[in-house]
Structures are given as structure tokens and as C-alpha cells.
Image (tube, rainbow, N blue to C red; front, side):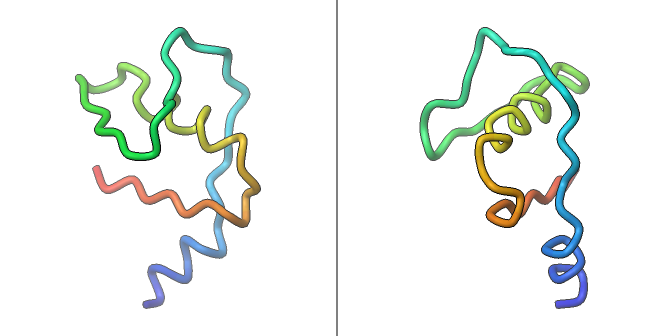
Length: 61
């Protein structure tokens, strides 16, 4: 439970990013691809439209 509280208290830091051709448009989506192809950036672009207190992002890789 301590680990989960840590992630609730330490919100992800969104870097300045640019518009992409592909956008996340559906609530449930599987994103897969090779390493360093921009999957996390695509997710952060989508999450940047929400309040920081509404986001819980866990990178399990």
C-alpha cells in the first residue's frame, strides 16, 4: 500500500511535447511497439488534458 500511496502523491511530470499524427481516441486501447518509439509520449499527450490529481500512471516496464 505504501508503493501505491507514493504514486498517488508523486504525480508524473509531463514534458513539453508536440502534436502527433496518431491520437488516443478510445477509452480502452492496447499500445504496443518497439522500445523508444514514442508509446509513453503518446500516453502522456493524452493524459495532459486531465488534472494532475485525476491521474495515476504506473509504468510497469
